[in-house]
Length: 77
Ligand SMILES: [Zn+2]
Image (tube, rainbow, N blue to C red; front, top):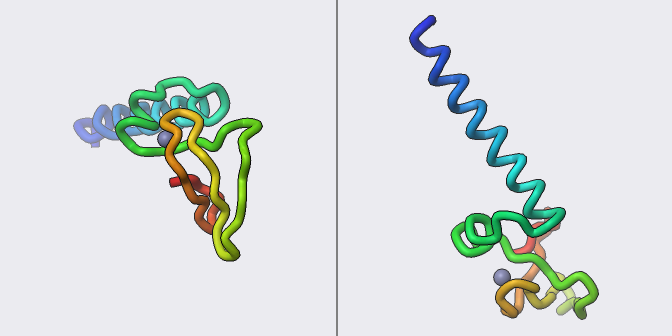
């Protein structure tokens, strides 16, 4: 048990850091290189145009200018 503990702790810290970074990205656009460029988490423009094609919401990504769509969970891709 004593051997597993540091591994579990390291994992927990990594996940916590990832979640923190994710929050920073979603709120302030921090770590764009990791979350946008690497994980392709696009973000709509703050005051940009959004439109619907009947089943999904479309917008333009504020970082790369590509057209993005929102899934049923509210995530942009
Ligand atoms: Zn993008």
